[in-house]
Length: 193
Image (cartoon, rainbow, N blue to C red):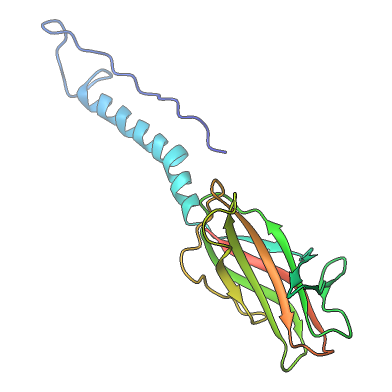
């Protein structure tokens, strides 16, 4: 945590016709300017630079999917929930689930990566980060970033800035056309700044 700024330099006024301004000495102009230099260095090192350094820092959130099923064409096709993964149920060709996600306000999402397995030759696994206005006004859910590849980081579709005061965010994890093949998701990782 960055400490509150407490100035160390306080200028002592010179008095006309009483003080002689001089270059050297403890009250000289050179000493006062050196005190100002030290003050600016403390301000930069302890307050400004740590904030600047934190602005471009890449951060990660790695999530084990804990999915709630939702209806597609009037049918709920839930994932089988494990302790640290989800898997498409045997004997089904599809599974649909979502989970709420919380990211820091004003963060910009830079990538989405999924780990797991898709043994299906025709099955398509799609994981997406979506946002929707908190009161469901305006357009429906907007996709910020999505991927249909396992192990490869996907980039945002456009502006992927998080605005918690106006939007809520969630992940959707869907697989279709997977026949009876194994499809599992171990982790969804988002990168943001």
